[in-house]
Image (cartoon, helix red, strand yellow):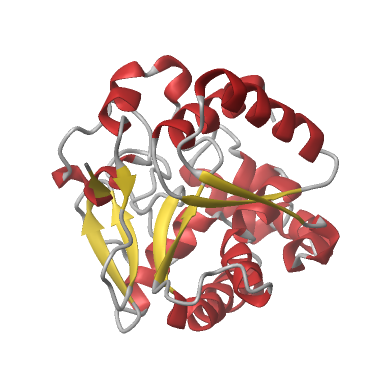
Length: 261
């Protein structure tokens, strides 16, 4: 992890009060813990942090890296990738796209390891660099002395940063600019505990049946856009452009809707 990502994590969760479980590979754990402890000893740390190790070789998409690589080189994928000629990692890097597609599996892993408190009704996936706070002081000022609230929801909340309706079709360009500018960022979303298994099932069916079976591959943002179009029975889109105190950058501003204090 770059130093800037650790700084973002420490600033965000050190300033905000919540419960955080970090899934981290053993090779990265000493560096991340050292950064956390140094910040905590100097500045204090408002959130409660629980470190959990995992092995990427146990995660499904890392078991099929060869298949992902072949798909990325396929003729179907070459046509698909014409939407973005810059060669983004979801089209070119098997390990990167595997990481993106494994995100929902960590929610399931937390459930399987009994890491979710009994009375918790919803959990949030949050990317490690959520705050971009190391150079965004207004963002951090907004979080000071705030607590992250548990939302009252019976559906998965997927945030839509552009207030447009995604199309449940992988060939659709789910964005408002040229190229694949995703409607549904994957950096922060919320899933009711009772829906974790069903959410995972439907997420990974989309990956398999609409992407892999058609020799396509893409990242979690595209899958979330498709899921929000196909499965409103378990999901809802929330327009993130309505949030007050949005920072000027980043996918992760929906946290502001769940702050107290």
